[in-house]
Amino acid sequence: MEQQKKDAMTQYAERCSALCYENDAIDDALFDQHHVFRGLRDRQGRGVVTGITNISRVDGRKKENGREVYCEGRLLYRGYNVIDLVQNCTRHGTFGFEEVAYLLLFGELPTAAQLQEFHGILCDGRYLPEDFTRDVIMKAASKDLMNSMAKSVLTLASYDDRTMDISVPNVLRQCLELISVFPMLAIYGYQAYNHYVCNDSLYIHRPDPKLTTAENMLRMLRPDCSYTETEAKVLDIALILHMEHGGGNNSTFTTRVVTSSGSDTYSVMAAALSSLKGPKHGGANIKVMEMMRDLKERVADPRDEGQLRDYLSRILDKDAFDRKGLIYGVGHAIYSLSDPRAEVFRGFVRRLAEEKGRMEDFEIYSNVERLAPELIAERRKIYKGVCVNVDFYSGFVYSMLGIPVELYTPIFAIARIVGWSAHRLEELVNMDKIIRPAYESSIRDERPYIVLEEREEM
Image (cartoon, rainbow, N blue to C red; front, side, top):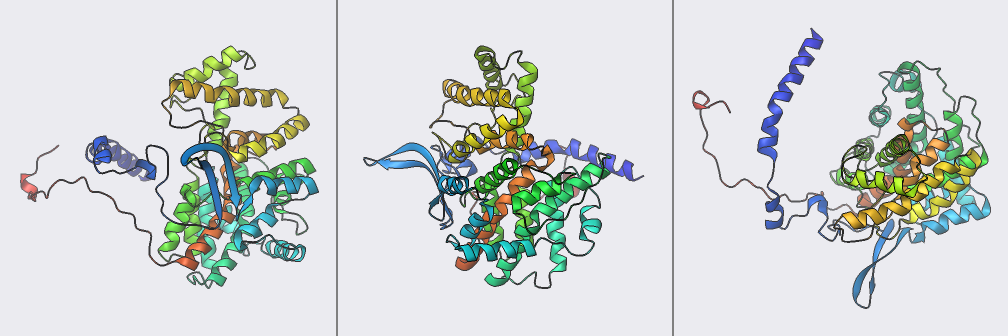
């Protein structure tokens, strides 16, 4: 009986969806007529300014002789170049997630004592309420780990007797707790899915308080808790590079919009998770992996430049892969000449590829990185240059780390919740009005009401 009701609902929705297409479609000409920018970006790709932030800065243009020109990409966290932050970790052989998280949350780099205290706070926060893993995460296990995480976050609100207190100290406490447990929510969610849905063995390892976030992630994921120093440090770099990217990206803007309504931290972070999971945002690295898998299946010799160029051309012609005409991982809304995150990541990717015996795959990625922008420039009318973005390499890195694809976007969330937290706090400190953008209505005139008996079937 239940299935019959679901089938009836499905059939009804399929039949009536034609009305949605008919009555919800908006004439393209109206956007130009009313000077409305699709996606809040103008024809030159500039975003419509909706706020001011002191947390990060993303540069893809600069002023030169009074003219605006495209430049090498630059990403600053609280004024510090992200490349310098990563290189400092490499130079001193340290893990940087906790240090950079402190910087984004509080605006300054920590002293040794402050960093030790902050690390201890995050370690102390790596626990879940009693039986939470069994009663919440293990129940209704799902392949969609982003939904699983959102469910867990909203349920955690029930264990907080100050859920609706949006004072800065309380929200900071909530954010620190969520930053601490996000790796557990993601990895335990995967272990539940792998056991209950995939019928594999179940491993639930508790985090080790002596380890960093990146080390604990690999420890909790691996059946034997083992990992190499290179693996943990490359994952640490990935977390730093994904931690923050301005107030205008979709999930961070969602964070600020929901915060501006006066909502609680758990609802805000669940909304941000829902925004991030889309393939146009946090799910992009999965599409890159699927595309590269298809490439190796369809191209006889991926190292042959002519064959590779032909395959990429067919993608752009909507004749290969998913027929969307997109080479995934190539192009960015802001960056044109280079994405600094991809630039700094490439060296670590190569090092890991050498350790894992994946240099042949690395060469294929490198060739696609070189050829794709040329082909896109030849075939598309574009207003700026095209470069690979951080998603181009991140999925490849995760595959070399043995991380299942279901966790790719949750790892993005584990990093980005730091940025979301910083933006939520900044919005609260400066909150004055609810963010309420205007929409131009395409309704031309008022329609006379038609009584039920006189309506005709459409």
